[in-house]
Image 1 (cartoon, rainbow, N blue to C red):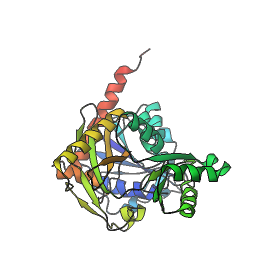
Image 2: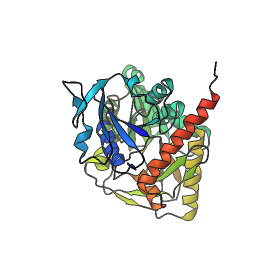
Image 3: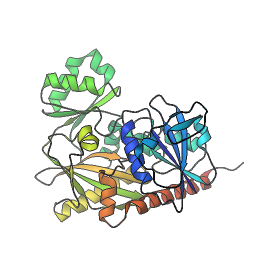
Image 4: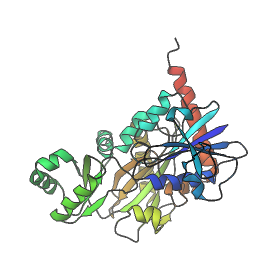
Amino acid sequence: MKIILLYGGQSAEHEVSILSAFSVLNAIYYNYYQVQLVYITKEGQWLKGPLLTEKPASKEVLTLTVSNEGQPGETYGELIMPCQIKETNAIVFPLLHGPNGEDGTIQGFLETIDVPYVGAGVLTSACGMDKITTKYLLQAAGIPQVPFVPVLKNQWKENPKKIFEQCEGSLLYPMFVKPANMGSSVGISKAENREELQLALEEAYRYDTRAVIEQGIEAREIEVAILGNEDVRTTMAGEIVKDVAFYDYNSKYIDNNITMAIPAQIPDEVQVKAQEYAKLAYTMIGGSGLSRCDFFLTSKNELFLNELNTMPGFTQFSMYPALWEATGLQYGDLIEELIQLGLNRYEQRQKFLVKL
C-alpha cells in the first residue's frame, strides 16, 4: 500500500510541516508501505517527489524544487495538478499545519476526489482550527475556559477605543492575543498594557481578520493526547515545563528549549478530569483520528481548556507522540494506527453515500 505524504503548504507553519513530515518518514514501516512525497510550496505549487522505500538520509530531500525535465528526483519534483495525487490502494497523510492544511480545506478537497486520509474530517478540522468557534462550542458543553473577547479586524479599525474599553472592561492585564486561525503559537503576543495590546492586535491581524483576546493567568500547561474514531482513547496528561515566560514558536520548534514531564505531576483527580474534558471536547467537535487537548492548570487545581488541536505537531520534540509512547504505543505503531483509523473512517463514509 502507498502512503501519500502531503506536507509543506502556504501557511506560516510551513517549516513545522516539514519537520513533522521528516519525523513521520523516519518511523513508517517500509516493509508494509511505500511513501510518495507530495510537497506544497509556499507559492502553492504541488510537486510530486520521489517514491521512498526506506528512510530518507536527511530532511533536505523534502524541500523539492521544480525539475526542468519534469522528472522527479532526489531534490526535484514534478509539477502536478492537485487532483493527480489520487491513486488506487493509497491513503493520504496530510501533515499540513495551519490555514489551508488543518482547517478543513484540504480535507474537503480529499473528500471531493474520494480518497481516504488520516485525521479529522472537514467540519471538525474547520471548527478545531478556528479558536473562536471552538470556544463557543466547548462553552456550550460546559467545559471551563479562561474569559475571552473575540475581535474582528474591521471592528478594530472602525473603533479601536471601543475595543480597548470592551477588553479592559471584561479582562485584566496581562492578556494574550491570538489570530483565530493559526497554530504553533504563530502570531500570538502577550500584552501588559494598552500600547502592547494595540501592537499585539496588529500582529494577530497579519495572519487573520479575526482575533481572540484571552485573560492571562498564572498556570501550568498540561496536554492530553486523544486517539480514535468512535472508540476514543486518551493518555495521561503531560506537562510543558517552561523555563521561559511564554512558550512561543521558537521555543517549540527552533530552540527546542522545552522540557516535558510525562505524566504531569498533578493530583489523580485532576488527571481524571483532564481526560474527561479532553474526551468530551473531542466528541463534541466530532473528532476522528487524533487530536491534542491543551489545558491551563492553576495553583488551585482549576482546569481551563485552552485549545483542541486536530493535527498536533509530529516532530521528535512534540508532546503528542511522546504521550502515546509513555503509554507503550511506539511512534511507528501510532502512525500505523492512524492509517487504519483513516481507512476505517473512509469505509464507513462510503456506506453512507447514495449509489445511483
